[in-house]
Image (cartoon, rainbow, N blue to C red; front, side, top):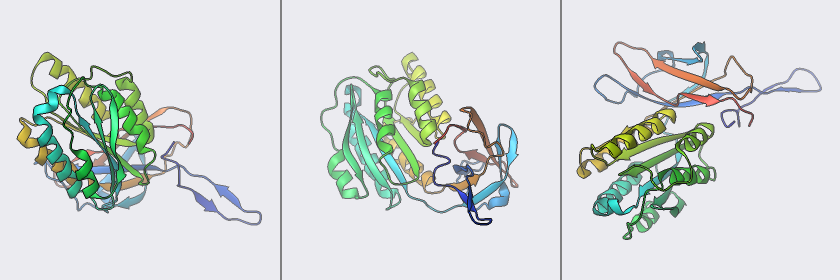
Length: 286
């Protein structure tokens, strides 16, 4: 379980030394006020974290702009052809607005997914590799997320994020939605989605799937009204990623019994605040 990896407390008593391993759960959270504005100036005392309904003691707190390993997943199916140039421009704007220490890759998908730009921190490399002119085929969305989750494990940053831009419901994958959700939860990958779809019955089901994916993985799905809103939407996502709080706690329940532990993070203050972070983790051995 990655929540435990890299976090240990050594207790030196007498010779020989004894080492006590303590699991730590790390949360990356964004906070909005009732007007939807980012709130970035809270201190540790404003937050309370609960695991399975029980309050936990916060041991680490920060609000620095930490770099991330990030995947841009772009739908390249035939139905995206007319929107592709706008989506590419938005993807590059997103990259330029991100932390210069972020490492990103680009994965295009239609009937099958393909990584067209491996991990890089060079925006010029992303610019050269994003453009595609062959939008054709179906939408293997879950296969794309599955491949991206695996590739993220080659990243060097502790925070991991996927941003998916798509216009439809999966119709070509071998992987399932449940599989990619479970893997993202185990790998602590946050997933954001920009959905470019209408109000058809198929679009309604696609939204339900995308809402489920993002809510279970600590992100959010956005549905711009038209293609011109894609760029401001992804720029808002970039701002959120760069404005997260880092909060860690050592669970009172240290058992690695394979159970799913529910997390609720709340922030107090004079006004109602909305906190977004991952809703839980799997207590499995590393």
